[in-house]
Image (tube, rainbow, N blue to C red; front, side, top):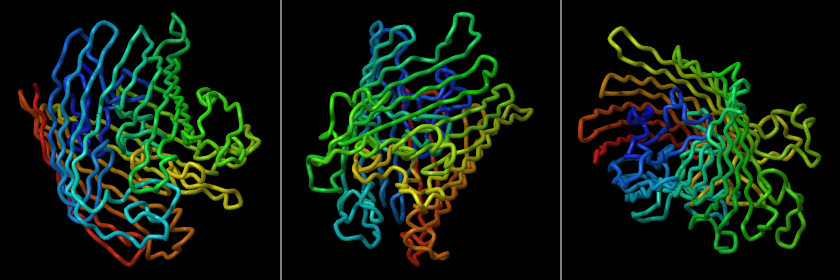
Length: 496
């Protein structure tokens, strides 16, 4: 049975029968020991034997004192005040067909928060510093109850091939806190997936393992972006490849690519766009180059994982824009900083003589614009034609720090038998691109520092966990306005 670890509760993905449920912020699989995948981390593990199962039940209550805050918590949005969530469902298998239905229902108190001054034409609850991304700051004025299908899918396995339809979350690449291309920051979107599980390229295993996934999905606009019903949905596709050579089995190299466009401009040939774009696009009657009709992101990831000594180092280097109209290697080779973003990190496990395990992790992410001001450089996850950007229902599906964001995360986890605890120190700078272009005042960086501590205790029939969070935000909204936020979370898991 594979090891599941979640950072916020110190075993961050809680295993519910055959389904993994996000525990809270910074939820992730234990990527240092998971050998079932190379770079494509699912939230659903299919049942291994035929039968019908009732999944374990996760319940949780969270609180923010002064502003909305939550990272990598899937469909659940945590505003100011109390947020309560319940994850439960069923799963099963019959032969090669398996399924999981594990929805989440959550209640958000959604108390009033101080919102920034907004530009004309932008919804008061939308991201105030750009009209090119559907990133919701607050979901209306009132408390609300919301249902999401959550970690659900129908799956068909034939040998090393897999096909599935569902709404489960995926995390792509080795990063823990800020995977750039695909994360668990927002709720999972409806998608169809075709995949090849990690497979040796030759029978004698002298070349290496390869993993491949192709995804087609549908992204939805939130209620707080615009009143045009024709642009409410976007078509998304992704191609995710990974390779681990036999002569360096500790090394995994990944290549990831996603494209999206308005469904109202979808053409049948767009099914092939993960491999090549055949035709120019047509938007509002104008013929555009493929580079404008679509928005594209791509990344290369590398992970060096020495499991014997408990150490791994990793990198994801991403591009948020096509290189140029001409394409090819030259534009990227001479201007690699154009439209780039990256995440780098390491993780080290230490065990004392008593068998206590300590896991130390550091991760740095940078999504701010590089130094190529003479070329148009859109912010990460934002686009001029696909104006809702890289979001689903008003939440990012990439790194939670958002466009122009930068962050540092340093954490220590302690694990002993059925008890675990953690401490996490974070620095997050919000939208440095906006700061550089519009603010340029050294005293007005929108910067947040956070200290989090938490613990989890496992019992025979249930688990209990708790977390405390203390944040201080300098110059929130780039104003002379410093504010603190106190957060906490507690909950449990019933083992049915």
